[in-house]
Length: 161
Image (tube, rainbow, N blue to C red; front, side, top):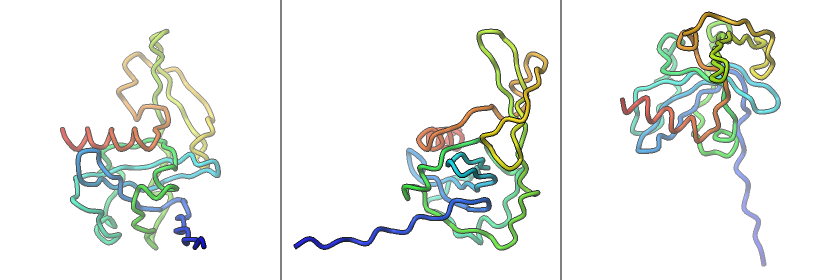
């Protein structure tokens, strides 16, 4: 006779959710969801240092945007599938403290760079793009969306440097 195992509950993925990201070689980085849309596109701020195990919510409560190693749009699969430990949500979360940055996209084929502005409520909705001077691609977070595996690899590389 088959016994059904209870399915672990999945976290509600929303603004202000703190989580740990397992690094590919060992340890964890930390991230926070700054924006979320219903289709699983998120904006996150990511932090070091490398930690041996996931920190507590109290241990990340003082982190701010200027301490972030990386800011990026990313997919929700690491969180949804339970691969990234959820730390929780701080009571004093304020979205205005975690702004939607302007991203920069570089077109290799044309050599042009664009500043990409997203809707403050939806990290997947472009409001406008403005062409900027050459070299501007290095002046802001790069536009694009990272999958869970890419987030893990990027943070591993950033924290190994």
